[in-house]
Length: 165
Image (cartoon, rainbow, N blue to C red; front, side, top):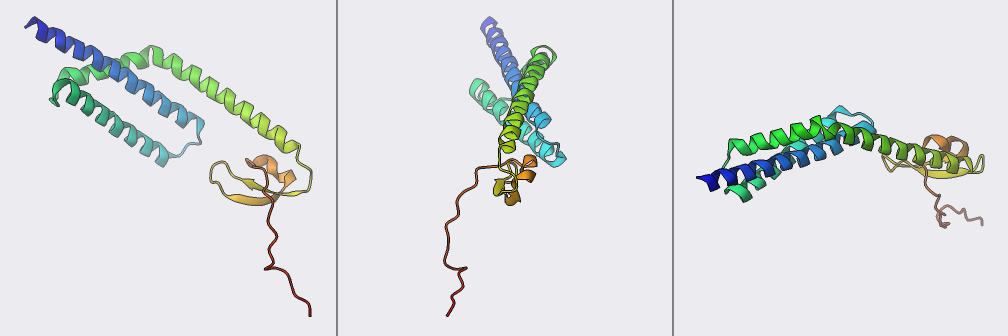
């Protein structure tokens, strides 16, 4: 009887750790949502994927630890671990990581603006959007608003040549 309670307590504690890990994964999703432009459909899809992944992880944990039997103390342990993580360490980790990511974005934007300012004025270049990967041909003066890539040299083709007789 005593070993059964000890094994259930161990399973409960490991499920609390699993809940904290799921909290870390959810914080990663939250940081991504805070950094990337808000889109309600994308956020909905991400939340659904998070819950599906969490359910699969929980199912595999129950399968390995308890032979696939659903026990309330395992689900409660995950919930307790998730809530303890979010109420204590999760708040600070989210704020710190979000500040670091925002700082890295500011540095990347400053580098991009510096690089674009060194382009010759009036020259036509090809730019590639960082989000949609569409290539546009613009003047260098207008390139400061678009994430740019180094222009590629075009091969000259004979198709456009007009033959004079």
